[in-house]
Image (cartoon, rainbow, N blue to C red; front, side):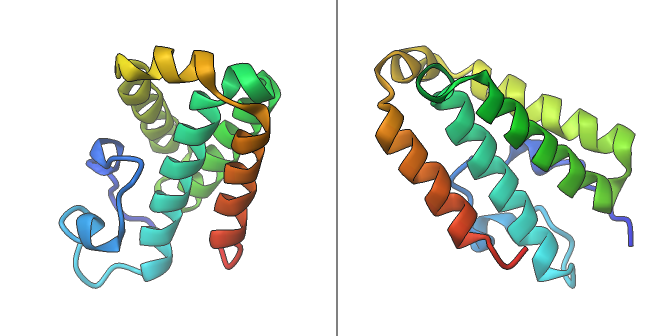
Length: 121
């Protein structure tokens, strides 16, 4: 099943199912909503924590996001959405400050929490 995810890259990393309801067409599979939320949270967290945990973790999160979105939108569109997420978070001026002060242990815990929260996907 393919759906158009045109506005997904505009969703904040903290988006919840209610905020996504305006973006995801009504009647959409709830799994798609959770997938978008998962990818946004995971990518935002690994981008923020990149200095503390290493580029490899971020690259892994990017690949996970790409594979999850490809399932619903095709590879080309999925890559477009991933790049949109990256641009949105990179443009946030708070990101640089937070990246410098990110704690490795707290980052690792948060990433593990995200994986646990979305382990049903």
